[in-house]
Image (cartoon, rainbow, N blue to C red; front, side, top):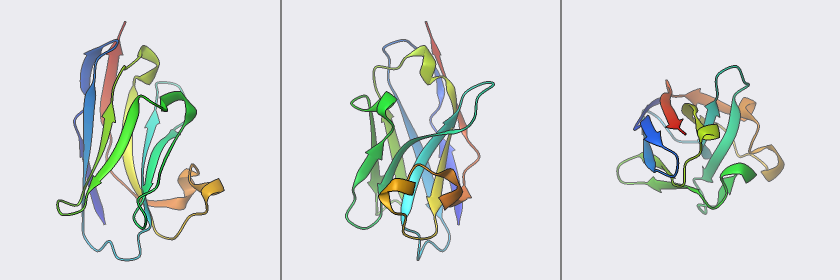
Length: 126
């Protein structure tokens, strides 16, 4: 499975960006697609996830109500719409896919995700 993320850039506080992640290759058996981010000098953290079956979505508290994860099944693309951006959202954003079904308590655990994109950088100026 290959993932190609794009859409990052420089935006002012309060602005919006939409990240895209095109997923190709053999995706059978994959259960969940997620977005993670890594800010300078910090550990990579979970941002949002969407399950392939049922389409339920999950977010870290800090982006709830501002970010929306969605999927275009026909285009094999996952989006992360980011609104009301804050300087603390500055990071490299990665998309990833989990191989197996993840229980809810583990959906934020990046070790559950086996395929990763290369990352796209988001900078929010104050």
